[in-house]
Image (cartoon, rainbow, N blue to C red; front, side, top):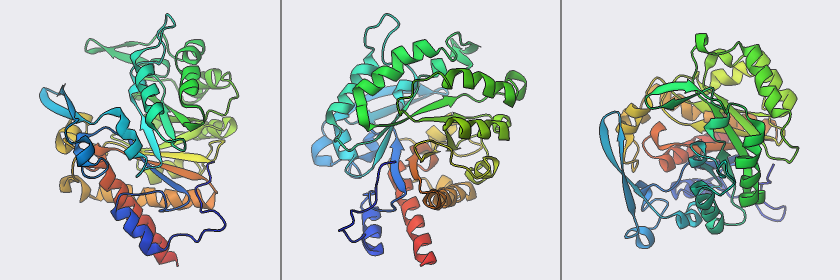
Length: 356
């Protein structure tokens, strides 16, 4: 686990200094067992927050996106803005690799390889990246032409190593903090039993190289989050992703279901704060776009407040276990990911003040 605590010769920042840092959206000193970051980074809506207007204001690109019959303009700053990102955050989740591997089947680098390499070129040496594994290796079914088909690449170890695992290490080196394996939501009737699910996973993960690349697994099917699954994670040293997402239980319930365990071998934990619970992706996107400010219709709900409290509690559980919690905020969970991080930071400091 990276040591985020102050050097012995340094006095820890005061509570008031850390509150001022949170207000300035600078999160490195909030808590030694919490590392703040976001899911993706190049949002034009963060101009004036994370990205200086005078540097990037006239360097915005845009693209059209259609979602659930509605059209949106997505404004983006250039990749080199990652150097300003890491002046505020300690970790960045890369998710474009979820949709395409880094190396094509024929062995040539994909466009994602070049994009991730550009990130590496501009990120500082102490940056940390959580990178999502391609869905083609961890999804049982894939959506193609409007329908779901069986995924013939599911748990293909050799292809995974060749097209993603090895090249992501080559690109990021020590800045690779972990790999997130996200599996799609499955109805009970369409998925194996929890026991059979673990058996399939084990055939894949037990044969991965022992190269210190920490894997974190996000299952989006509540019926698979059973003791047999969490026992297996602990046995293999794999992380459970505590995900605040549409159809998943609250983080506090996931903590209970896990047997109150943080099983990752490297003593890191990932909490992904994604789409509000019981809200579809397209609806959350429509409600929060262009992601430049918190949305009261979301932030003032009990669900959102519980998310903040649960993340705070998980920070102190990480402290008790001498672990590091990676807090990954998504715009859709709040309206604006930097403001969500700030809200959690202040809640963590509130709890520290209360305990003192």
